[in-house]
Length: 483
Image (cartoon, rainbow, N blue to C red; front, side, top):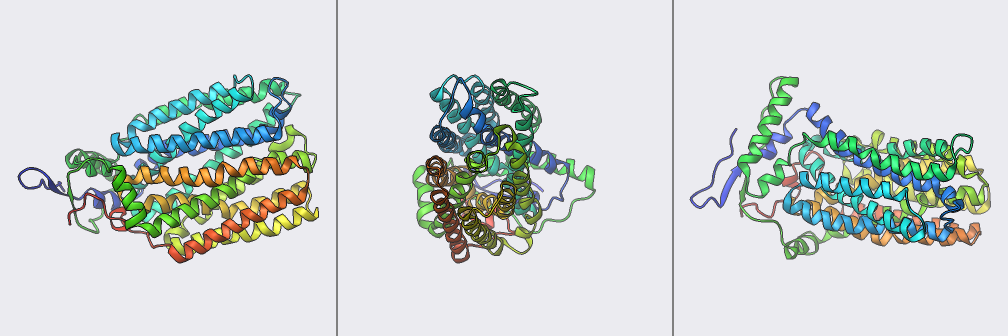
């Protein structure tokens, strides 16, 4: 089917690009999208887990010798970079396209991660971590947008959760790598932790090769007044899918009518978020902020708790990080499909609530000294099985909540605010609590994180909306839609 040109002047046009993308059966093209774009989360998980697992070695490093508070501050620097990277690159992704940003953000990440391996003091280490975070923040905005726009509606929730969940596949790899690079019998830990950052960054070259053949998002082209180019890309995708799957099914809905226009202005973005879709803005902010505090407060100080309160040697932390990472990975993989079948609202509410309740119970057990190191790890593994699915669903919710013209910017803005409020404060606060050496102090931090997750669950139950199986254009009408 072809897009219909508008009347004289070319301002108004019809397009069936969304319907054609949503009718496609799952095929090799979708796997290529998921692998080439979703691998970002694997790299992020690898990067973040290395810092968590290597925290003890960096603390003991003769060249850096960072304190617990400084380690918490470097974690916050990474997140601050992610905030500004998401905002800057997210703004660009809505204006110049998703595809161009894929390569820019990956280069920033790659070079900064390698540079981290050559850090010589606290300030250089924190600066390179900040730049690494900027690259990852930009990836979150551009990649999440593209995946949601390219994946058929009936698979969107499952795919988005599973892709975000692969962060923990990278975390598991990072835990195994840490076991090797921190073992004095294999390599000098001072060389090992530096080499881990250098090799991790260099792996990005593989991702660049995987992304070379991915097209620009047809939905982005369509919304920027290029329906013919969008239709051509969809036609190529259809031929590829039909060659593997046979004749394509019929369209399940009709064309959308749009006006040619430029990118959304800041005023339009603000109006859409905090006027037209105010309740969705409140929901997105709550989900993102609460999960960011919950996650980053625990994860960035995981190794410090094990070494300080359970006397686990720094080079053995990876053994405890591995089951935690696998639990986080399995949550979205096993629960993801239920967000498309049972529905967004009950599943998001349930996963946030369970994570909060279990964290409160575990905090009490930690304060009483009832748990061994392995029992504490098992408790965290169960908690984050649910929390991982909840956190991934926060990104899904924000991406679906607002018009397509501002999708990347919306993801970036809510990621930035959520991370700024919940993520930057969390690691610094918990690093300070851990430095006190008192279990009771840390327990209050765990209770606070649990309360925030319960607040998020209540907010989702009150303000959540049904998006499962619906086209993006139906969930939130484009700004360029004809009235």
